[in-house]
Length: 208
Image 1 (cartoon, rainbow, N blue to C red):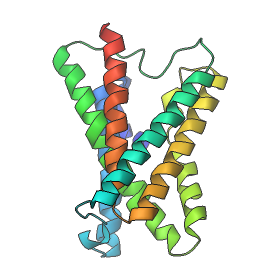
Image 2 (cartoon, rainbow, N blue to C red; image 1 turned 135 degrees about the vertical axis):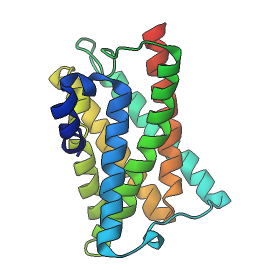
Image 3 (tube, one colour; image 1 turned 120 degrees about the vertical axis):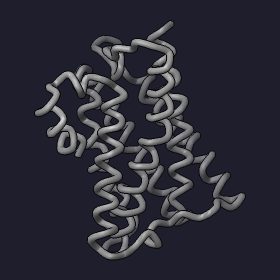
Image 4 (cartoon, rainbow, N blue to C red; image 1 turned 60 degrees about the vertical axis):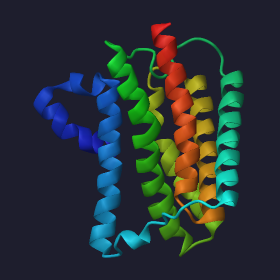
């Protein structure tokens, strides 16, 4: 999906445009939001198809528990990952504090909104109407994982395997949260908190 929407930009400006982490984030965001918007428009379902409601206290607890679960998955994956290779983001060319902040904000908020709307609120919801919710969650998580392969292009095969496995399990957790609450703000919130910490830690390591 990202490659699809990045292709016209590469043709005009060259390959260097996608080497910027901020542009990668914005291209991904634009691609996912466009796909979600096109589906809603072409299917004539309207914005009411989106499960956006003010979270209840129970849903806030579910969101926090979901964040904790995906964080634990990541920590386990990190603990199992052997050293060596180049991890995601270590080749980022960070030129200013403002760019760092833009990367953190974009990665922490734009990406979770776009990914959860497309993968959970649209794909998972559609599949769940035709197959069991469990199979829908696993199927969407497989697609979600495959679309993250590019994030591990600079890692070793073992690192990539562990990283992608973590993404797959995290996606299942997010899918379960959405299935449990039927409120897309729950997985968006959990995903956003996780990404905020992840991107903040990553950028801090780059300037530290």
